[in-house]
Picture (tube, rainbow, N blue to C red):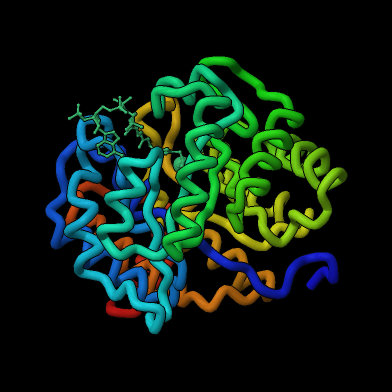
Length: 311
Ligand code: HMG
Ligand code: MG
């Protein structure tokens, strides 16, 4: 293994939130819980379970409270569950739920942020100052997202300097991790590395607290993960089955599939603590529940191997 690659990678499973938020048909709460449990059995220790957003904005997340009520949110649990929170109302609901980790989410582009959460980027950062302060005071930990970190569906290519500035603002207010989103899956590996260089040249100490969140519109998400890995990034968001998308980002397709990331790390000799065959079982469950085929490469391959071994 190349000495420059990390030896351990943390995966943040976003399937129950990003993966399901774009599904048109409402998935019964009990099925979401089964999916989350299957992901936990695969060894995923960070699972973004739901969102405290307006139910009209994302109807699929209306059952956030019920989903979290069925999970072990205690500090003894080996799994950290988290939920998206866009404002103080969302924080109030999150605190009531007992969830211990939240994620605030903004972007580099005003057009996207306006459509997504009804605020400019600057307004979102002002809102989050209070949200993060109150969340930390209530004993919660906070992650931050910077969406459209490379390309905005409305404004096109975004400057790396904007990513740097928004990331700085989030860390300065007290988030412990920032996930950079290739929201519409349009970045190339070279662009991933350029933006990371601009950010890390000024703030080398951010490295261990940065995550990459790659959507897979053009099939380059796994290449982008590799590009991040080569820059020393060791936290990646992924979604079982490659599900996902944002209702306010036209053109956004699924996330990089968890099973594809785990399989890549396994073959690179990098430890994730996740059992790829169990992730495939979670994907198979969701495929059955959704009633349509899920097509990640690793899922197709391991499902075939299983079928072959049964013959
Ligand atoms: P708004 O309508 O501007 O909210 O929505 P408002 O503050 O004007 O309030 C209007 C009403 O909404 C009030 O109720 C509030 O109480 C209620 P009323 O007094 O009229 O009865 N309200 C809420 N209810 C429940 N939960 C809340 C909440 N806030 C206000 N949190 C808002 C603003 C932010 C709520 C809305 O635009 C929204 O929910 N947006 C969420 C959009 C979303 O979830 N997008 C997908 C996630 S982001 C993503 O996918 C990208 C990511 O994956 C990374 C990447 O890929 O790049 C993270
Ligand atoms: Mg996303």
